[in-house]
Image (cartoon, rainbow, N blue to C red; front, side, top):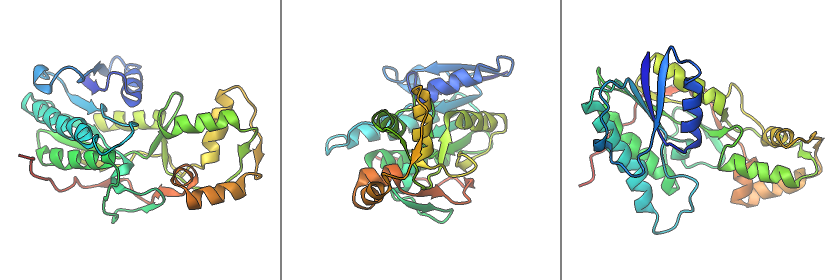
Length: 273
């Protein structure tokens, strides 16, 4: 049996993963821990096989004064946790990063796309990746996951916004766009597979094919007990929104990982003094 610690006691991915792994009690003992009021050095990680670091600052309005908070939690805390895990003999450290490290709202991400984050969230996550990557060696496996948008019941962020849109629409937009996404079920299974066969590198868990935004709205309508009907009536307005507004681009633009499943760990960066 593998002992797994998951950070992010109240995070969507963390709580979902703990519930998923605990369906296999003969294989895993998964425990959620909170880093909100306790520094990594206060924990004893001896005997832990893997740590899945899902805790982060996300979905918070970014202002000129919030960059230090993003850096402290998403970058510095991640580095401190990974170092403590390595000192205590943990075999694998899985870090939940993000597609936001590429700084793209529309377009195609390939193996040659250079990360260029535009948000404080994306910058702090990429910086965390670069700080933990050099820790990886034969005894300590650093696994970085860059999932696209995560959807599923109760998902926050963009899926939550789409659920609100679904509540207001009389029908489901029949609009064709392509977005790489991953369901919470697919993501949890990808993490489980990585725990079973640890590999160092950057990985891109996602659905086999891109998903249209309308498909998520349709799914939300069904969860609301409605029978969705498809209509192209709103398509001209959607085209205008995704051309002229950031919200429209994020909701209905095309953003995909193209033939991208695995990359080497990023180059490391020196610790800030």
